[in-house]
Image (cartoon, rainbow, N blue to C red; front, side):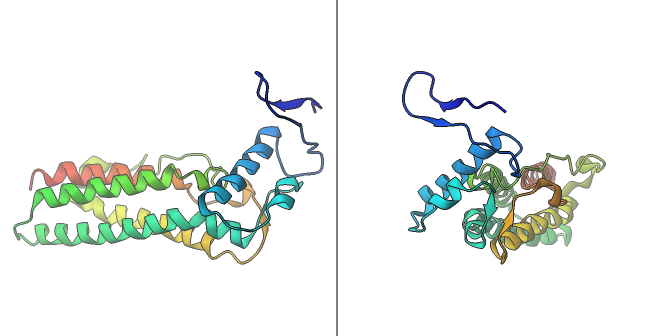
Length: 208
């Protein structure tokens, strides 16, 4: 491994490249991503916890407190998302029953769902935690043919996203971040599926 230095090429501070032998960091980039993760949490929540030992640590230890902080904002967003899904499902049930519905209200709900899903997907606190490869969860699903019934699949995906974030927020043990242990779909995969399904519902609602 290189024993060089990392920093800005045009001057400024330089830090020695870490020695990662015997650690679970795959490379220098993974190490510095971990430092950015901790500093981002500190910046966002202004907590008084001394993180210096974690910044120096040779293992990317995800303590319960850090897991809670990382999940806090996206979990709140996912709760809002589920509430909007409930509202949308109620409107669509009325439409199925032949009752008059406000299409613009359906469109407003589907747009809000996409806004919340994207906010979760792009949340910086999840950048290091969620290293799973994106999957197209709807690859074998004829989503365009589902119409407003896509709400069933949308709810399933939204619940999966919420349960994963809730589990992280309630983590009780310190652990190392390991991609191999994360078998469920990534947050990004789930949120992208939510965005796609909501768009299908919006387009179908215009024909009600």
